[in-house]
Structures are given as C-alpha cells and as structure tokens.
Image (cartoon, rainbow, N blue to C red; front, side, top):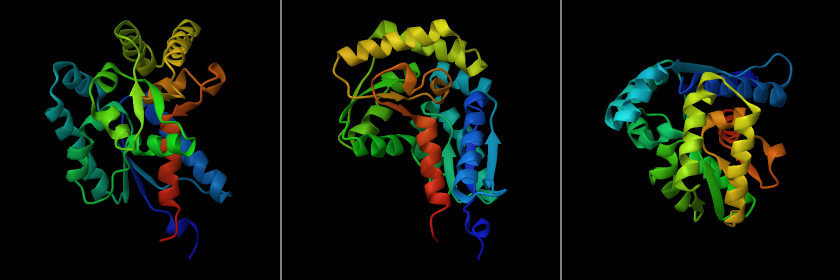
Length: 237
C-alpha cells in the first residue's frame, strides 16, 4: 500500500479567522511534503465559517450558539470523510466538548498538544497570550492544569491590549512593528513573573511573534497543532 493511501484525512473547522486558517493549510501541506517528499500534499477537508457571526456570539456571551455553529460544521466535515478534527482557533476550544460530542471522529484538542510540548521541555509554569476570553475564562488554564501546568496571564491592562491587537489588527491581516514591540514588552513583564515560557494562545499571534523576539521558549499553538495532526494522520494504521 502506498504512503498516500494510508494518509488519514484531516478535518479543519476554520475561518476564525481565515488569516490563521491559511497558516494551518500551509503548515499541514508543508509538513506532508517534508515528511513524504515528491508531490505529496495533505488530505484535508475544511469548513470555513463566517467569522463575523462567531465574533458577535463571543461578544454577546452566546457560546451555546457558537457551539451549535461549529457542531454543525463538524458534522459536515465528518460526512466529507474527515478522520481527525481540528478547531483552527484557541478561543473556540471553549466549546470543544460540544463539538466533539457532535461527531464520531476524535477531536485533537489544541491545549493538550501544547501541554505535551511544555512537558517535553519540563516547563510547569507558562505565560499565556491570547484573546480576553481565553486568558480570563478558565477553560484553557484548566486544561493545562490537568497536565500539571500552571498558567500565568498578563495583568488586566495588558490583557486588553493583547485582545485589541488580535481583533483590530491580526484577524484582519494587519501586522505592525509597533504591535510586535508591544507584545514583546508584555512578554518581558510575564518573564519577570517567573514563567518558563510563553504560549501564543491565539493562532493569529504567530503571524506577529516568533521565537526570535524573546529569550523565553515560545510555544506556537498553530504549528504545534499541525505537527500533532500530522503525527496522527501519517502514523501506521
């Protein structure tokens, strides 16, 4: 049997925002190319939702409605043959349990992937940069906590700044040196609080910040999520 025929199909729930979903698409295809060579590319099926609808539900606190949107999308992706499911956004893992319950294929939870990477580097206290929802609600920190990892978030003022940069700039493809420096300053303040690394807990932040910007170990959630998905998709049956 050829390598191509044993590749499992990865299902993507994207569009939140499409800027980072495009990064998922590129990283998954590059990963398959690098691992299999030749003309191989990833076997993917994607549903890209209208982010405006999701943002409105987030802002109103109607997470049940957001869960319903993603659950419906997940069922469609499963019907299209997906064998593993990825939610291409950290924040929307707030409704990951609802999405997972709607389908019969496994959902690869982004926080579990991040936790495994932290454990490999023996880091048990980490700073988290993300949307306000991810930083202030407990769903992400609790998931990391289940792996015995303590999460430290920026102070309130810095949380608002990070949230603004994400929603006013990064999800719209706006990348500026000024915002990069602002993020670096926030990371520096987290370092002063004793964290052993920083989780880029919003998929768009990887468009702005990389390991070259700080001496702290950086954990890019999109890249880690894609690597773990490929490990599953290309593992022996």
